[in-house]
Length: 68
Image (cartoon, rainbow, N blue to C red):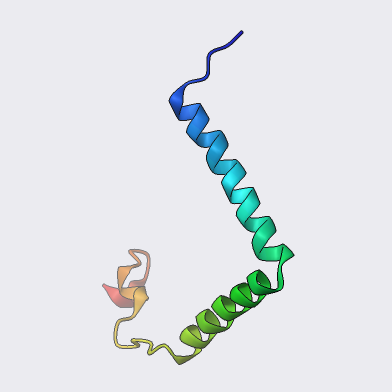
């Protein structure tokens, strides 16, 4: 019989906790509302984010002839 190491025990208990949390979040109305709220806030934040257009990423490309 194999002995269980502390690391393996922590891995297994973490997987069980993650599965239980996923079931609770998806299985209850409160969990689904919380997930919906997080999703709406994250998409709202992405929509309202200010983007910096002053730095062109092409300047980092070594194959770009205009950037040299």
